[in-house]
Image: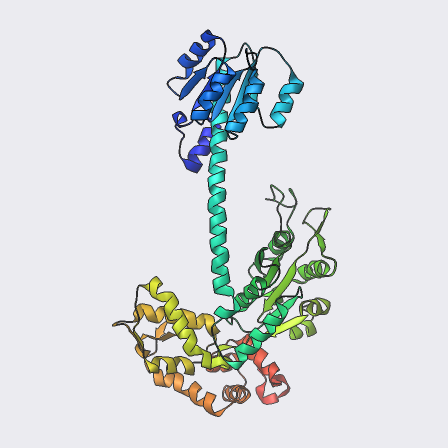
Length: 488
């Protein structure tokens, strides 16, 4: 199989060359007959003895490839191809010439009038190969045009979907805590300022980052995301800044990094608190000078990128421990936004439940007519260590388990092992009572006291992870290490 045919067979199936009409123009009848005899079984052939009659045929039929003799009465082959191009600009032209006029022919090739020229006496295998390649190129151009249109339509669809999903108006909730966040991001979105989103895991930091981008002057430009915690230092450097061919084993070609891909747009660095120190140095330079070098390269690349970063970690604590550069912290912390945990916006749970039920009814194939009030109360009482993301998962799970069109308490499964809440009142009434009678600081103090300073145990009692517990303790000024009775 010809290599081009193989490529096309992978992309769009093996070609039937008779689907691509070929026009052959020559003033010598013997040549026309030889051409017919050699190609009649494999090609859809039309012939003409001069340029004007060939143009009449071309006005009635679209040809993929046009093969023409150069020296003909009435009109030369090149003149014919120039006129034919007006009728059918997509067709590829091949000229058969008995004399060499390289300047004229090369200029015609440069202008796109001629695809190939073959000198006489032409070799049949060479001509066959040229026609086959021309048909394949024609097909690739058509296929590429179709793919471009599909991509344009799909990109437009994704943009519309993104605007629907990530616009401020579609961020669910009406609590004061959420309104304060929305007020802040609405103020900063139209600017080019660097934004630092802080909050526990699952509070919607990427959702907010995307909303900022889509409500900024860069909305039509790229939004590029990088999870800094998911990649090793070496891989992350290449992902952010790109690399040159041969920069390291496996770098078989030059690759653009995320900064270049986000040029004129927005780069979202998720989990920025997990950046290795060596990457922090390069990131600081980009923020200061708007330029960098690819891994293994010497060329300086300039970019115009708005940076939004996010973290659930206590950056001030990381700075004090020497794990995060102070100068980078100040660069990132131009406009900090603290995202509230779901515990701090429990009044939004009812709206979120309705939103996620509507979202996952079609996914799960379940239609909900009623949501039991105890179902909502149980969710409002839970402490939500995974925040909105955990709520979304629990609602989808509840829909799967539901029956009779009703969401009931028995459909709830809490915890990482999806275990059934056998005694729902025991599992959730205590946090509810605590929420009613105690503020967050009191709850933390009581949990640490009851666990005798065992932070892992205290975190489990509160339904949060240990890093979140440390973050909340620092927020409320609880310095447990200073107390002897709380020493681990």
